[in-house]
Amino acid sequence: MSLPAPEGPRLALVVDQFFDGDRLYRTPQTLRVIEGRVESVTAGDRAAALAPQGWTIARGGFLMPGMVDAHVHLFLEGACTDATQRAAHLKRPVQQLAEGARLHAREARVWGVTLLRDAGDRHGINHQVRSEAAPAASGMARVRSVGRGIRRAHGYGAFMAADAGEGVALPTLVEQLARSSDEIKLVLTGVVDFEAGDAADAPQFTHTEAALVVQAAHRCGRKVMAHCSGPRGLDVALAAGVDSVEHGYFVDRSMLSRMRDHDIAWTPTFCPVHFQWAHPEVVRWPAATIDSMRRALDAQAEHLRVAYEFGVRLLLGTDAGCMGVQHGRSVQQEMGHYLEAGLPLEAVLRAATGTPRRHFGASHSRLEPGAPFEAALFAALPVGEARGPERPTRVWTAP
Image (cartoon, rainbow, N blue to C red):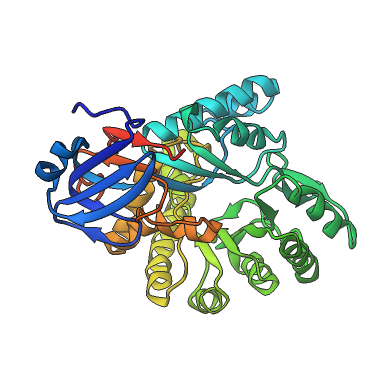
């Protein structure tokens, strides 16, 4: 498909189907874009009337806002599935890790992902790439960066977090991180024990300490995303009033009800667990653990349906950079998991576009008049059928 350069001052884009970030239109629509902003969206094919007026005309099958991956680690290499090589990767010079992060941000954009929320790295590479990706001509997905997360010394999360002190040291650390971070990442629990149905260790922070982090972050105008799974960690997160729960394995209906009532978002991250379940030859888990993973995935899917029915704010995030979870393409795989869980197509598309933008406080969460034209054009709807991920034919990044 041959399309005009996005820099044209007046572009009329005629598509067979269109998702604006909230609603799916299954009939032809014409979007008029002037100097990188949406001027209008009208039903039908308006090309015949616009071409004589000097509009550049382009056509496509399915248009949607650029997708959002709400949970990634740019400096990690998801394509690498060898444990020894992954450990060696973390010991590479920071310059090499940064170059890998840039490549991952470029790859994400190739797949139609135009915004990433990096969920932490101890080097601050995510901040660096955020700055470099800001210009529309960078060729990278834009980055929302938490910088370094917060963990307890010697607890889980050394690769992505700073060590926290006690008492008043917690708010001080939050204030320091908030000067450069778009959000604050709180690492509450460690790895998941799938057979036990809980995190392997007790929460790293008490209810009081977690509340101090949230209160300090909110004073600084920052949201808090909490890495947690299991009943104990989730209880701490919800009581503290975090803004989003990341992963959240072994959540239950009562917790989801609390999340709805307090407008706490959820990023379920199916992809890393699904990869390990689907490829036991790579991870070499015992059969009992693989069976437990399958049950955990099924429970996660069931609770995702409940969360949707309850009205919990859902953010689609992949944990890209984890073993087997590749940057960019995994977003469509995660969307497939949402569909398999039984969510309606519009709800899945919303979780990957409009909802995270609203959660992040964007001025526009939809492709509507006045909004920056940040979009991905596909030959056809890229999810909802039994096929693998598909790259868009064109991606536009907002100026």
